Image (cartoon, rainbow, N blue to C red; front, side, top):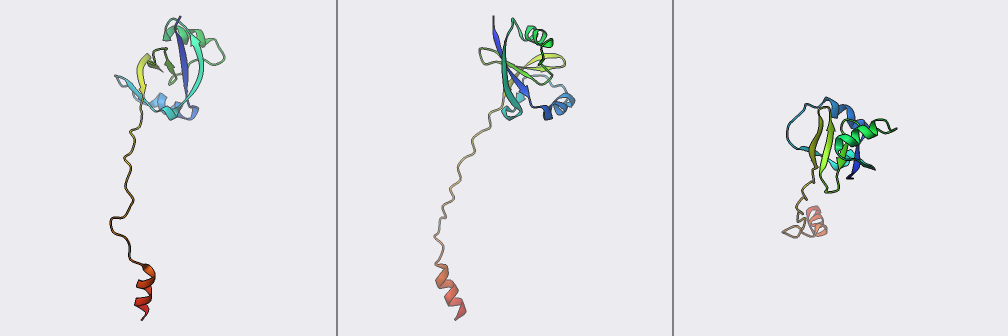
Length: 114
């Protein structure tokens, strides 16, 4: 039987997720918005939802199930939809070395006073 790892949406983000409009296609999720949780064995995401409904920690809208292959499904009002976690692109390193060496500030300051 397949197992699913649960990723719980952080509580303070649930109202925003609930009020967001429904969009079609793959949902793009931010890893920082989720906390890894327990694992559940079920025949499908819907079976996992039904099994956990009677538990103390049911799946809620916004929670994500990750299957054994690494595929993600987010729980929405309309059912489970495909999702993936966005990985931020690495920023290019900026060269902070000055092209021209600065003048000796002590000699500039002394010449200005004379």
